[in-house]
Image (cartoon, rainbow, N blue to C red):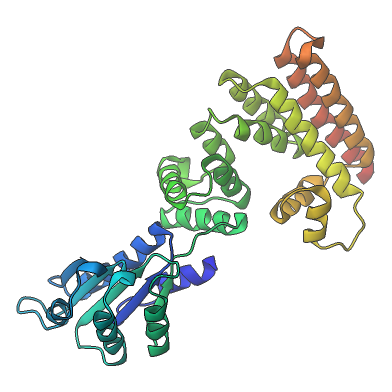
Length: 337
């Protein structure tokens, strides 16, 4: 669905009538803005009018659709088109079938069943439609973030994009704002996991799994840096040992999964979303069963220490990260020998 939205927004928006349908206001606003921008690029003096569907009369619509004395083109944006009268709706359908020269109409519908008859008639007449549906699938939200960062002139990989979605949530306006800000502020425009962690340092749910991801990937130095950052900003050490244990258990279960299973089947068995399986497969490279067992024991010892068995949680967690890195490096070397 996201690909369809992006394709629709990248197509030539200067068509006689555009229907923008769906509840996602950010996408709707962008679709409307694309038409207005294109019209003014073609004619700097283009006349732009915005009206509510409930306030539009047949006479008012006729006036909007008539040539302007001061501009060669006009754009009419009708918000909440589901509220127009039947008479106005018929005129809008007629505009789709026989458009007036130099007139561009944008009809905005928030989704839902109201105005369904008009939508059906417009679609049957061949209206150009841009979907503004909610983006709820995690993979689509990640794709949206990556597109937003590129739009702002930056770069971000899939893993960092997922980290940003986890930090911000699935609300598109918040994701778009965060992506633009990070792309602007990040060194060389590269939005990395460490950059995201810096901006969202108060979010414990980000910190724990960032430390765990760096640790199981063998990036011990980065894991220790993230650990110290997390603890300094108030992350409970128990959350970090929990994230480490979860990451290692997931890798151990993936290592034991039958070959040939689809990612969706593996994800169901592991209790993770399908996108996570791709990341886990990458993290599993370099690990052996013996190495995973050694790392899991190290985390169990750290967990005991942070829950009262030791006096220094920071030392216990740092030691665990070093042991995880050693287990991966040593066992991986043994497997290659």
